[in-house]
Image (cartoon, rainbow, N blue to C red; front, side):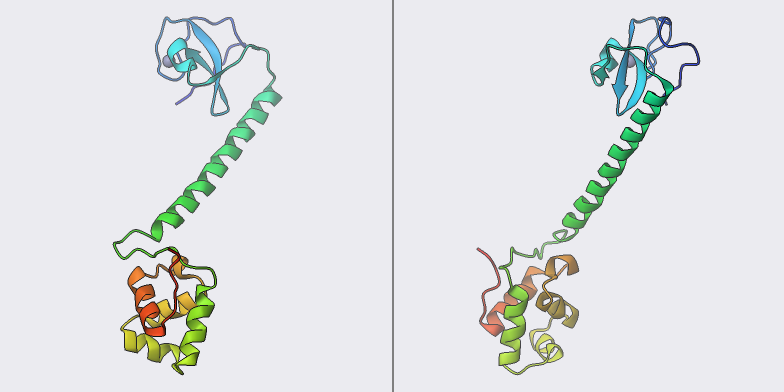
Length: 162
Ligand SMILES: [Zn+2]
């Protein structure tokens, strides 16, 4: 945990490094993830070294806000990553689908005169999966590749972009 110096800015060379706690070392001011810290040489290399030591409280606040913004960005990216990974977490991976695959399935199903529940029952697949494919949201719905292959075969359409 970073502790904040209560003394004035600069002039205190006997403090411990605020990152690793090393004492009796030459400290320098560095910015790590937007926080201004007094660091030893080793730790300072991880931060953006600053030449100026006379920044104001307002400046510190601004930096803190910037760091918080970066943290929020990081969270958003993490959510997106989880979302992508969710689609291929098992062995039945969804292949890369052609654009308009949903319309192809729906049209072909209507041409053979089957309702979604009838086609799903015939192929032994979940009706929810079939509808997800027809609505073009197969990746989000976690539809398996085997469902796509079964639909391709039964409807004689090409859905996989190879
Ligand atoms: Zn250190």
